[in-house]
Image (cartoon, rainbow, N blue to C red; front, side, top):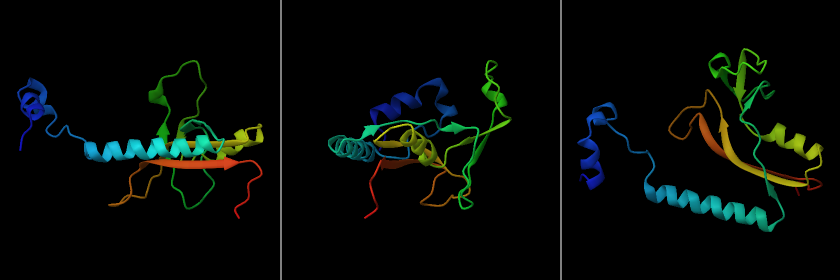
Length: 142
């Protein structure tokens, strides 16, 4: 059943350019995701963690042979003031950069953010996804 928004959109001249403008997630799913993120951040906040955001784009790639990084050509970025390598990599995980923060003195940190992996497509895989990663100096796995 067409909604008022659908009817209004379909009457616009550019509607033919965007035959299906709707997201793949429902609004209910997006609200559930937002609630989950709120609860997750609350948990880490209550336990003394600081939220960080490390860069997604890096000149270095992962060393894990089982992860396939997404390669980005740096030329279209057109950043004349920076000497960039020809190719950059989208992070497969924030692990390395977060561990650098620990080495620099961070005590308890977490990140909820995008990660990218090539070669893992399927009904339950997407090249871009949200990853939660956390570290606390001195913690053990047990």
